[in-house]
Length: 352
Image (tube, rainbow, N blue to C red; front, side, top):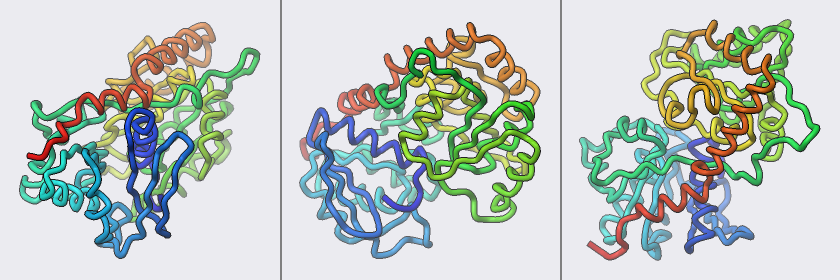
């Protein structure tokens, strides 16, 4: 529960909450102090205290108690396939004959010379794009996508207005916030919500300072560490949400995996807010161009500027896009729908 907390970390928490409404479910995670918490909806959250972190990385906590914690499970569903906990869980589950599924969120690392993927019975991917990146075997793969809670993320009440542009995500160069600041007219409000950490290695480590310089003289507001309620309110108040991710950063670094899914796009859709985002990765599977929002070429500031202006200038178009987006999110992209897809795809619980 401590360390990184972007979309790849929120995903297992929200999915586990939805699964707990259908089956007995326990989420095992890591934090500063060991504890067990039971949420009102029935989800048990077991927090293990890391004994160490491999290479000091927050995604690689180690605790020798993990195999014993998994002993009572019928199905083990890990996240971040190459993380240390997922590797330990995979080996322990394989040895015990437990059914094993994995959802990957883009964490890099080695695959034990191709042996690591062989340990898993099912690959439950967040998009078709993710399945290709993971090179998941088609006969063992199901696309489950992700979701948003339509009760938490919903359109504004009648009479409440919308204003400005919103970005929600990690403040890292591949998210393209520098381009967004340039694309939004200086007199239009832009809210930049940072939901996780940023790169620690130069030159990427200077990215927040770059954004601050670009924002001078513009109506840009940076929000860090918001809670769920604050983020939901920002979605409702925004005229348009922009996710201008790139495959080449402002530092010239090529990004092979930029957006496996885009939870912010789904949360925006559930809020009835049009989305303008880059045409890359899993975003093209979520946003329907011209129906729920617009897709633009990554790095094309002029096209990004034009689409933002189009949505903000035409209230009828914005309402149409937002209404379609809300309907699609409610039909396909809720956490309960994601949980049902997982339950249908889980491997048999009988020992091998």
